[in-house]
Image (cartoon, rainbow, N blue to C red):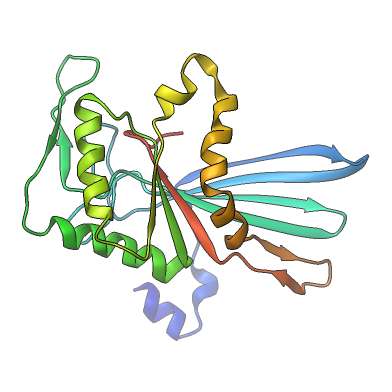
Amino acid sequence: ILEELIENKLDGFIIPLLQGSFQAAQLKLKNSPATITLISRRCTRRLGTRMWRRGANLEGDTANFIETEQLLVFEGFTSSILQVRGSIPLLWEQIVDLSYKPQLRIINHEQTSKVVARHFHDLLQRYGDTVAVDLTDKHGDEGQLSAVFAAEMEKLPNVRYVPFDFHQCCGNSNFDNLQILYHQISEDFEKQGYFLVDAEGEILEEQKGVVRSNCIDCLD
């Protein structure tokens, strides 16, 4: 229906809706006013609540996949940088019970490698060069899931996979240790760049890739 409206130039009657979040704040940079905005857009292809919806479907769409954009307006310039996050793109589930951390179950399926490939092919088509940052624990159930993910990523030479045990490295609020992760991906991050436009609307820079991160829940 939407395609028909657009083809007949009736798109003015379409009300765009966003499932996600929006927040803006005013601040000062070098004693000049600036506005920073954070927009998170949730993909509608594999919706569901935490624990009840995990991993990917056979098309490569993952649960809780979110595109987050940070916008900065400063001295007539507007910059933007995108990053994405989503559930580990394997076929897996979590059996919900009364325990604090229900057990994970990896589903053995002949399509697993194709599912992972489809997911990252979609990212490469939409965003360009992709760096996959895996923040899961490297022990227990999460460790097993992470190990399978790492093994599948070895089959994708055009995507860089970076494991980083967030809880091990940054536990007890040791967030300064995030520098360890940044040093690992800094060259990729700088190569990907960001979007920048001036007050006249001229595009000065364009983002050429994206960082895709995941933990287990991918909620924050």
